[in-house]
Image (tube, rainbow, N blue to C red):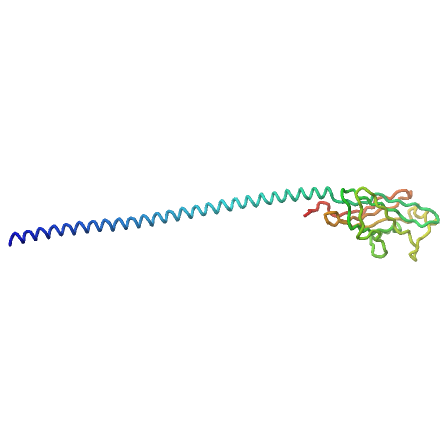
Amino acid sequence: MRSQLAEMHGTSVQTDKLITAANAISDHQKQMVADNKTNLAQNKAAIENTLKENREELAKLLGENQNVLKTNLAQGRAALDASINASRLDQRAWLGVDNIKGELVVGSPYKADVSIRNTGKTPALHVHADFKLEVTRPTEKPSFKYDDIVVGVLDSRGVIAPTVPYHLSTFPIQDKAHRPLAMTQSYIDEIANGSALVWVHGRVEYKDVFRHPHWLTFCYLLSPQFKTFDVCNEHNDTDETQLKYR
């Protein structure tokens, strides 16, 4: 009986040791699992932080590259526009008054012949010219208005080719009834002594082959010698030439 009790006691002790060992193993495994979870969480956080930093760096690089690309595109466009503008500016039509002539003859109406020349390299299109010959006293100036008489010699279909002069004639000096006035010696003497001033002035509108509108105004005063017309101090202008052709 005693031997059986001793054996049972030994078995019990052995069982307790096994249970203790099993518990220790279980605790160790739990600790390993907990450690693994902690490591996984830390690794995940580290990976997420790295990815965040990489995304931010990539976004920064993309932004910088985009700004550089925009700058390069803008500079390229500006250079292209400048090149196109310079080329079209070089090729466009340029109208100007080339010469004005007129001869005072007793018994004949007096009119002036105006020569307009295109010094550009391409035709001037849709040319319309308004101009007139006007007589004033020395204290007066021309009206520079063109709506009181029919003066549109060139209409909207007018074309002036490069280098070729285009000749136009003003209406003759008129009397109060708006009829051509035959020159008398006394009238010619008034012009000669400066009592009467003879002006030729006008406005020309046109388009170049790139469909950009242009204009010019001109004014000339007959010299007392009757041989030439001198440029006036005003009403000689043109549109801005440095246009952007787009």
